Image 1 (cartoon, rainbow, N blue to C red):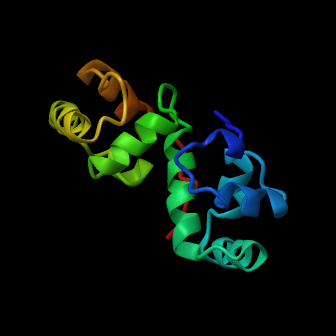
Image 2: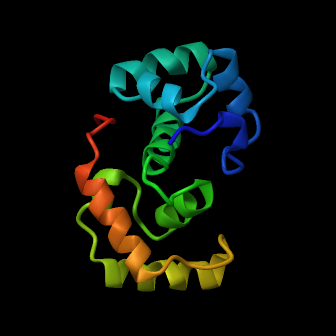
Image 3: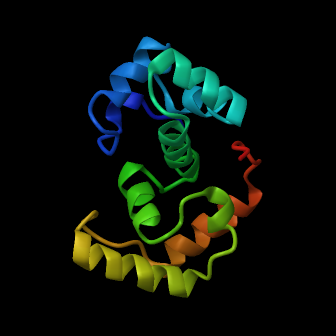
Length: 135
């Protein structure tokens, strides 16, 4: 799925504007531009953002390729310790569901934590996704 960069509330103000000035208006374009260390370095030079910041945002966008994961669930996954799609592939659905519910109780990132069944679908989808980001 592709989302507008402007719709990502989790992005710190100013980052979306910097990305737009470099012609990056969707999560798909962000993933293409920031998928390699070299790409992140070049994009950093064009935007004034750090490669580390771009990697974090690219990982957000990468998780959002999974049906059912929007910006809020991508943020909750990160808060629960799942930074990348690659990490998600190896998670235990039951343990992750418990961890996400616990994190959400403390941080109130989403109205309802995802069900274990939804997380199982995310994990299965992650296993089938082509790798987009290299480190």
